[in-house]
Image (cartoon, rainbow, N blue to C red; front, top):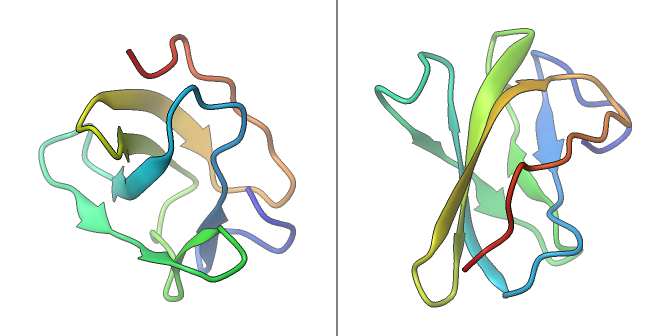
Length: 88
């Protein structure tokens, strides 16, 4: 999570992925629905209005379509959450 991130501003970056990340989505209802993010030129994915929650699920999709879901990511600036797996 980018410095300054909170429930009111979402900005996250994917690092150390085996493949290029094409899309990042966020769910505040445990994966029932997903909201998109906007990729920035500096390689962060943003939701300017935030998620409205203290934590959320994050789904990342590679350029070949493989996905990884990371549960209960804190909406806290400078937080690092390690996924349990990498892109296949």
